[in-house]
Image 1 (cartoon, rainbow, N blue to C red):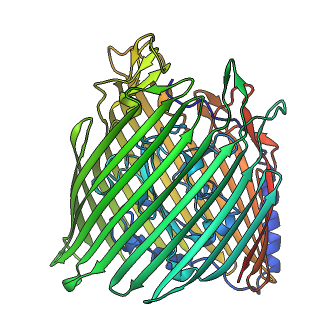
Image 2 (cartoon, rainbow, N blue to C red):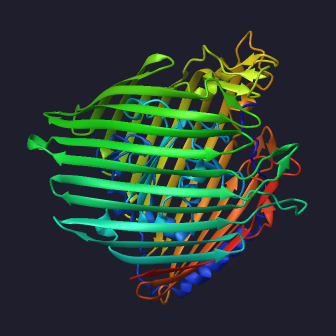
Image 3 (cartoon, one colour):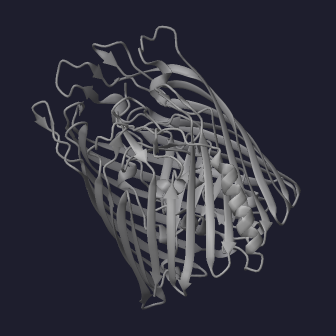
Length: 640
């Protein structure tokens, strides 16, 4: 009822080819025993990566008490991904479903749909979810992937540090400092599903600073239905941006910004209404100050401004401005690591009605404030306890209390047991309170004036180990107890309510094995069970089906092989279980990437997705919907 009906479909692939690929890899491995080690980080180096998303401060990945997977820059390059959303397929703790030529549904631990609202997404510390529905327009979010240092993907509650909407997970995209992207870079790509081009140049500034500027453009072709009828979802998009840093051993200053514009093909008339194109444009500007103080203390101050304008004559047409300011202060004490901070956010929007939806009032201003504190207590040399809480106020429900407790136990330097108990909320958005269907009376569906925050009480237990220098793995079991989930009523005069409750539980696991100097293997698995029911007295005709369409299982296999003469081959096999309602068949997708460093600074590559299948459904398999086809593309990277 509340989903955007733009999901598209995909068909099953043939798993019998997996064995052929495995044989091919083995043959290539036998021919390449004289080559150097993989260009990626070794497993020991990966475990010693400094991450920041789990505790809002630098810590080693191997010490993090969270279910966190790190997508490295080299993994992105070797996957052949050319958009941020496609790069997120590398995380085994995410469900990524492509809806059409440019839109995606992305979630962690369930509740996936086109307006998913329980996943917090940040790009260099800037929150990119849309306040009026608490979700992400993925066709508006992208970066130059060559600038990405890593993507930290946390599944599980993060409300104690990150606030409401960090209910099922946090995605933190972290780009490289500008000092690491000096000189020029040109990237050109073309294939059967579109083309793209990117340019970046980095240089030095007075006072020990550095900068980079970039521009990128992409074009996605229209998809087709099973009957080979072309849709109207092709998209053209351009984006430019910059980053400047003045950094030293005591901290520094960062200033960065982006601007973008995109549009789909014209969709033509719907009755007497010309739907035209979906157009989206916007820009942002962010400043950040970091400083190391006496006694090991550290200070971080950040502010950003974000503007977006989306024109969709069919659904709705939001224009919004967001101003966000936050600070945090770390204080090391004897046996303690104290972290505290706060923030303020203001969002103003004007949501012009579309053919289907409107908002009343159409224009408003919203405010959020927060204050958090966290204390990491060293109980013994091997056992830590972390306690924290966040107070966050919003204009709909007042102040929300978000506590959390975690423990870390290291029986040996190569092992970590951790557990967590947290409370997280998904605070109301304007879609819950102010939406109207149709946009003018009489209303078939209306927002609920008494809609409250959705609540999750989350329990997690995890184990991470690196038994040898060539093998590492992580396993997490979780249970989310849900209350006050969004529901509806039987139309007409239906209102949005909080009349669904239940549990979700599952297991997430992944591992990597350096099988040889030039061969790295990886695997990931996610199991999910949902038990959601409407509360007594509810008249919701949709029930839990409106809260997301999720597979009970998905798994991934990866192989990265360095070949002689500066060549490399990567294969990814992804299996996604069937979606229950609406029914979408399970599918297996095989992706292939081949790269060749022709000369120093020049790389040619070929990437193919779904190589053994013409097209298959990923989300909504309804008759007449567009399908996501097989794609093959050629790319050249030239660094100067």
